[in-house]
Image 1 (tube, rainbow, N blue to C red):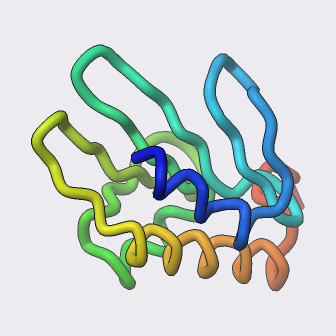
Image 2 (cartoon, rainbow, N blue to C red):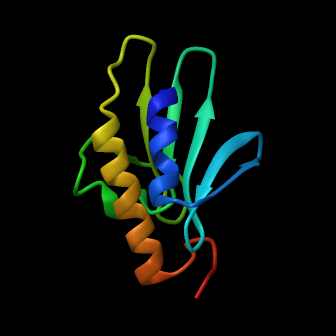
Length: 102
């Protein structure tokens, strides 16, 4: 996962820690990485829109959230995650900050 995280800033330039998680932003919140004991969740703030590009994204929670869960034996395709990050950043550029209500 560490090499995949290194690629996220290419699409989502701003990085910070929020709610105890890594948060990547581009024109608003884009991607959240949440680490648990036996899995890592990669959350997309526009995940419901991204689910059509990658069926591994499961819509969850309020608004447009969606996530992909990775277990200890899962193989992570860094190129695929980078592509999703770029799509998430492009959606924020087009639609604005997903945390702002219109």
